[in-house]
Length: 157
Image (tube, rainbow, N blue to C red; front, side, top):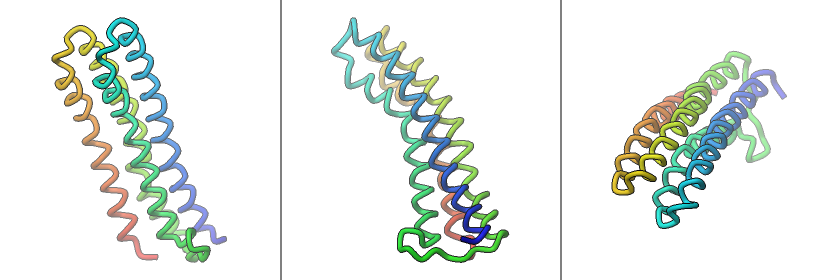
């Protein structure tokens, strides 16, 4: 295995791991807040489930980025490309937008989701407003995903 290939694989691993950790923490935060509300208002289950699930998407974006890079490297077919160190570092860098922004936006989206869950507990008709506010944080994860994928697809191997 070339050094460049190893560097690119580490980038893919970080893209899957860090946003996944952020999503897991945030989904747990939302679940904890929602469970308290559901003990008194079980009829809000669907609304609260949506709010809890929203911060989970960054983990999906990171996983998608890793899978696309691993596929591009030829690792699914069993014949990996030989990368120079320079190409490995370029691909590593291409993973960083979703790695860093995915982690941080998941954590902040989780905080927003918890607030929206509390809003829904007090004013159930405002749950859609809470969902919209929570989804706005998602915009930055989507932009980071697009940046990472565009770089991965356009770096010559």
